[in-house]
Length: 142
Image 1: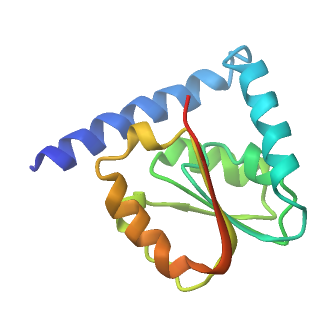
Image 2: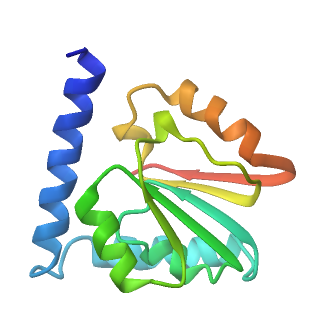
Image 3: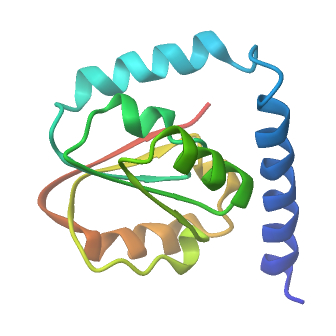
């Protein structure tokens, strides 16, 4: 097993555990996430094609009211919850390093995900084909 695979397994295990914890504990970063949602809603008009990498339970993606919303996360527990909470959007369980989509988006969101990535440059290279001439890539990191 490579170092990247070990790291990936550790991060998936962590985020699966966080998803389960969030079922019962509602105090996890409430103000922070509400404020991020406000900022993203200010920057992104409704009705666009939005890809969120590291979408968690899909709440930020849903709050953006996209015409087409796609969320990617490597945590199976997060994706399961996202699909239940927001069935109108597409959620894919995948590692962003292995991203293989055949469409372009108006907006690509990377919210609080950079610190979990093994190779940030590789992710930007994966995003390239998903971005058109006017695509906005919006990143935040705590």
